[in-house]
Image (cartoon, rainbow, N blue to C red; front, side):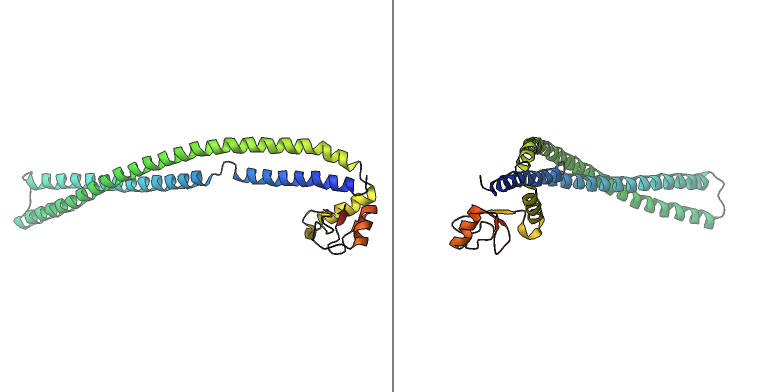
Amino acid sequence: MSRTKPLFDLQTLQSQSDAARAKLVRVDAVFGRAPAVVAARGALEERTGALASVETSLEACQSERHALRDRIAAEEKRLYDGHGGSVRELESQKANIDAHRRQLGVLDDRALRLMLSRDEAAAAVDVAQGVLTQAAATAAGNDAKLIEAHGKLEAMLAALAPRIAEALTHVEATDLALYTRLRSDPRSNGIAVAKVTGDACGGCGRSLTTAEAQRAAAVLTRCPACGRILHV
């Protein structure tokens, strides 16, 4: 067995582990955060807020209407209880009552519009709730698939761990130090050992001379261009 074979085998296993961990990170990132659910929840909150605002305005309008009705009733009682003042005072009281009745008419119209708006807002909340329920049901199915994928990735990592540990026992300490340094170099993109393919470095594609290829087959040799360990 060549000196680079254990390194290449180790890299193959660790690359598989790296890929599985990267997928696991992506799966964890989307768990329970389906865009459709987030959007539907936001829409429901917006519709619910609009309904609450209309109900608050309607409540205030109704309160004002009731207060104004009580005021009109009190003024009419004073006007017609037989204890009125002068004619001018009576005319003034009647004018006030008429003005209040006109104001009450405005409030009645406003209350009717608010009631219609409340009904529309309540219907919009019902629709938004239905959309959220459907989105949540769909997301639940997607989450089930994510959970399944998560389990498979965890199982893959668990299966790779002892194989990586075993592969490490076949690598010489000095070679492992070089391998680890090269693999952690950002420029290597995690690839420390490049397989020679067609007399070229599989890492950077640099063509190798016949002497370089022969040397790589005999002893641990690094690519003159990218510095990766060459494996034949």
